Image (cartoon, rainbow over all chains, first blue to last red; front, side):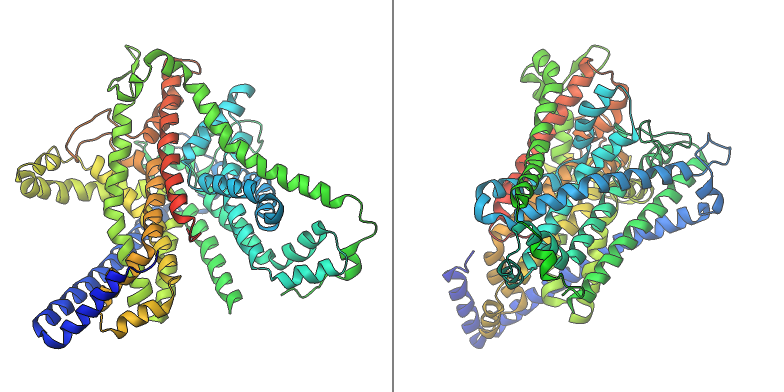
Amino acid sequence: MAVRDRDVTDAAAAAARWQGNSLSDMRRRMVDRVATGLCWLATVLVLLMLFSILFVLVRNGIGGLRWATLVHVTAPPGQGGGLANAIAGSLIQTGLAVLIGAPVGLLVGIYLAEFTATDGRLINLVRFVSDLLLSAPSILVGLFIYMIVVVPTGHFSGMAGALALSMLVVPVVVRTTEDMLRLVPLSMREAAIALGAPRWRVIVLVCLRAARDGVATGILLALARVSGETAPLLFTSLGNMNWSVSPAVPMASLPVTIYQYAGAAYDDWTALAWTGALLITAGILMINITVRLGLGRNRK
Amino acid sequence: MDRSATSPSTLTGGARGNGDAIFTTIVRSAAILILLGLGGMVVVMAWGARGAFATFGPGFVLGTAWNPVTQHFGAAAPVFGTLVTALLAIMLAVPLAFGIAVWLTEIAPARIAGTIGTLIQLLAAVPSIIFGMWGFAVLVPFMAHYVEPLASHTLGRVPGIGVMFRGAPYGTGFLTGGMILAVMVTPFISAVMRDVFLSMPAVLKESAYGLGMTRWEVVRRIILPWSRSSVVGGVMLGLGRALGETMAITFVIGNANHIGWSLFSPGNTIASLIALEFPESAVGSLKFSSLMAAGFLLMLISLGTLVCSRLLLRTGRVG
């Protein structure tokens, strides 16, 4: 990681040349200008992509953003269907996923942050695996839940979808919980322990309380992350054309409905797909912006 | 930090009891649940894939056929597509991410750096299916009408590499897939790079500037050597994400079981193949098992990449 000696001597040599040779100096400054320009270009290019995505979403999706879209359920093409069942299904499945995944993630985060002294080795392994799950292909999570839930129960269900999503919630919550608990000053723990508090009360009543804003942030980010996930739901909750809020049967969701509608040959279906896409992106970006603004304020 | 402080009596409670033992057991079981999650995934995928591996043996990986009628299945084409699109994505994303990270840490006026950094990170929050729709609505026509005809008239005539830029300009295909993935993974890679660059002791940079180095020379000769292993780790992290990406690629890859030199030709990836064909395969059939086997290969490839990434990043614990 260290800067190699050669780099520094190179730099010194370059600096020495700078005094004597104006031609090489001009070349160095030209290279610097070009590199700086390319950095500007990269940043502008990626920002343009973001704005292009948002622009296309608004242009294609805003037309379908009517009351009817929000209250009518999906219908065959040409019959004025909406997205109500998909929106409800998404809310239920992501809600259940967070209810299942967040407590597990919280406990694991506590374990990683607070038990280093006794369980160092296991902790390193668990952290490693949790980080792997954070970036593991989400479609494989869908296949996994299909094999262990859908096949044994014999049918697709909203619960299977929620379980698949919860596997994606856990690693996000683990990461933020651990990071936030590590920010709690040691003196607070020591003070509580000095009062004679058992360790679990120190962790739950002192450390977790001190870190609760950050922990809540992690849970919100996990919610945002899974609410746009499509691949894990394809083989678990499948989708449902009718109004259904029971997690025991196949359940519609916004991402899967968008996927089915976007590729369809009917204009009203593709329009609904864009409206759904606009809704979901707006929701996710709103959560992200709120969280980031909140974090920025807390830091000051 | 907390307005409603916990009073000492609530904190210590009554008798000690075995609360600590119970609590330790609970958190430790939760941690083991995570290990079981990943272990279970590997085992279940291997179990589902056993039929395909038993029928085709190791040849499954190299078989180019994917034919439900003759019941011949091989993963060569989707594996090829997965690797080609992910590598293209990394080749395009790394310069972009590096440029952004340098811009954010060294060039940007302090007042706007934070806002722009947040905007770039918002791109990482956009769901994959949205990238797919955008790719299909914007990028595919753009590639078909401008980029691919232009490239095949210019680069396509260069001997040697020309073969990569020839073919019918459908707009979908490996190159478009790689480009979509590049846009998706750029924020991840640039976030890792920015964090490493920021964690560098300022005195190293200051001394280099003091010696009369230009900004680019500081980046090239001081910052990059110092942060090399973490930067490579960040790139591997992006590669891991690109390998397993499903929805975005399904929209733009063209979905054909095809291996070839042309970057313009439609192909498929393991993830897109599973997304499209899994709903049409019956449990227990050879096709079902072959899809699980392809998924198992994807798991090996992406976990292998992510393990390398984490080992490289572990020193700094960023990303």
